[in-house]
Image (cartoon, one colour):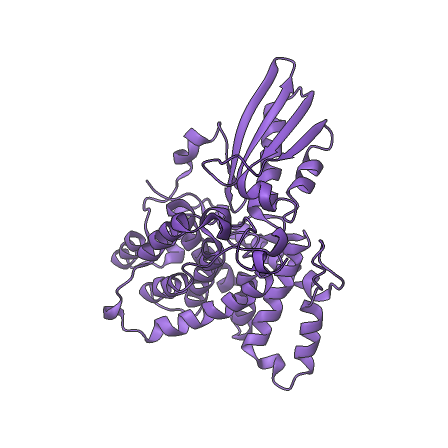
Length: 399
């Protein structure tokens, strides 16, 4: 077993949720492409999709995707399914009713009856674990970026040029937007106000934490409003990488090097996605913001020219110290605590690199693969009310 393309980690699309918005959108596209003559479609949402779908705009995106066909949406909050992001499509066709189960596994990816058996054909990397990749790169005297380029399609660099472009556009929109985010929480958009306050502050323009936080807020608020963003690895965690990018630009890192760093970050993301999960509904926020933090740390370490060992250790520290993080969005909206969390974990990614660099290489006891495995097991053991159901944590306290 190997790894699929890192393009799966960075997907351009509308927020606020890769699993609850992008996934259902792609699922509807799959159904409409497969069945050409449709009389009616019934969509039943289960688990996290049912419990937090309203706040995540799941019904809105399904209505939009199926607008040309008679359809209905059922929120089944009682039936237990094997995967918490399961949806069933009942398609009334001239040949009878066809039933399709689709699973949204995070990051905008879906599992259907058609692609379930084809998944292995998409694997393009020969290794499955970071330890093996690291040892291979050291033996062959190549960088992690070289490793990615050697196995991806020739369009991988242009693909990531566009990723950076979309991120920058989301930042610009976020820094200029005012008003309130959608939903009944009445959360005010603050990135513009924060940016203006930072500019007026004596230390603001040069303060790392302020700059990182403002840029993370800008994209996280764009995501929460349903704007176009890039998953990294999900919509809810999409504000982490933009904050890290602003930090790199403050350090005068070129866009070319940032693009290469994004590609290295993608390698860590796809390892988590294929060996564990990047779904908050499956493993809590550690699988979203924790993975994003580790990706950000890897990107920063690469851009600063650190060794392969230091890059891997930076990502490991970031993930290890995100273990156990719960996903408890208040009222199901990707707003509280999601927006602030993106900013805090972008700053954490920076500090993870600083720590990794001063820790001796011969005193490393926990591998990145160890942390990935632990993250997944922790997620499986985690109480369901802390896994994007809005039944516990902050979502229970703040009603």
